[in-house]
Amino acid sequence: MFRVSREIHFCYGHRLLNYDGKCRYLHGHNGRAVITLEASHLDELGMVVDFTRIKQVVQTWIDEHLDHKMLLHRDDPLLPYLRQQGEPVVVVDFNPTAENIARLIFEYAAGQGFPVVEVQLWETETCFASYRGSREGIAVDEPGFPAGEALKTERFGKNQRFPA
Ligand SMILES: [Zn+2]
Image (cartoon, rainbow, N blue to C red):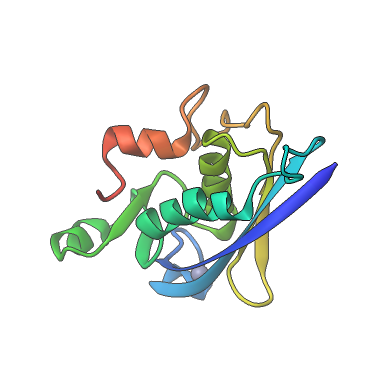
């Protein structure tokens, strides 16, 4: 098996609901996503996937949808106020932990056809969460995630819950 990984840096804000630690308050991170792709065969150029292509697709999406945005649970009571103030908020159905953000990025990359096997989300220099899935079956049947075909990001699009 061959593997390639690409790092993508972005800034995001969040806070966690029903949480006792300091992450219950609004704050931000300089996040680092590490997207890992795997293939048993290389393309005609001898690559799994061109690093440039990962950047073009995944980084563009992260820049547009996550970078410098506040990720909040849809039940967050601050949501109406921040929206009213025109703050760029990303509404998610889950607590916006590093684990869930890793999964969000994983599902986007997989939905774009990349043979992604793991996404790590480094929240700080010393802490990261990762999400792994198979290229074939992305497990999206757990509570908080849509069942079946719809990838999380597409569902956001349909419901227009991501800012345009
Ligand atoms: Zn945090």
